[in-house]
Amino acid sequence: MTKNKLERFAENREFRNMFQPRWEDLQQGFAFKGRWRDFFGNDHPIVLEVGCGKGEYTVNQAIRNPGKNYIGVDIKGARMWRGCKTSNDLGLTNVAFIRTHVQLLHHFLQRAEVSEIWITFPDPQPRQSREKRRLTAPRFLSLYGYLLKEGGLIHLKTDNRDLYDYSLEVIREHRHLPVFATHDLYSEAAAPEPAISIQTFYEKMFLEEGKPICYLAFRLAEGRSYAPITDERP
View 1 (cartoon, helix red, strand yellow):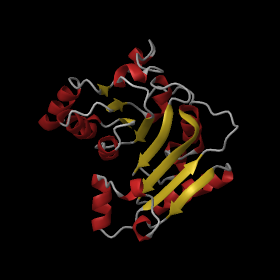
View 2 (tube, rainbow, N blue to C red; view 1 turned 30 degrees about the horizontal axis):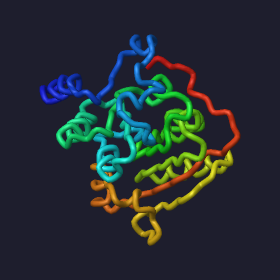
View 3 (cartoon, rainbow, N blue to C red; view 1 turned 90 degrees about the horizontal axis):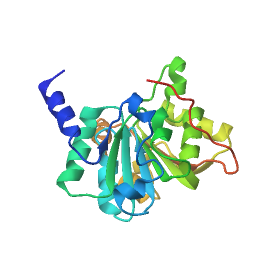
């Protein structure tokens, strides 16, 4: 492990808005589950960025929308350091980061505690044997349905056309409700402003390479019973 990574891991432990409990700690309960208002000091809507990487969406949306609280989630601590440091340097009080596996999010958030979810350039998991690891696989959509308030939007941005097509098929098969779908976001005159106003590190790289960006916004079907993923210790 490089010295730079070690320094970032050490600094992560000092940030007040970075949470990275061990599995054993989670078994005792997470302090802010169902009580994020105690951390943020308000009851504003909570928006998740799942697989947040450097946290570009988390931080930039928090700057643009002070009336919402943003939580970035990823397992890569060295990457998340960038977003966490930026949010602290800017004095943002509506930003938090959780270092954990996505399937464990129900340990941190209770049912219907989230208003919106962004999935930004996730690992497409192209091999068929790893389909269940795709962040738009049915088991993850069930988890999001558990966390989301009814009618909450889910956004996917990806450069991977196969993941985009797969996600559309899952939505259709399970009769969820597409709101906006395009395999070339920046060619759309009616593209939603939040989808084009912020570009992640990877998105800028993909655009420079001439790759089209796929974008999908949808709501989960209402009136169903959504549940967390059965606990899987990483």
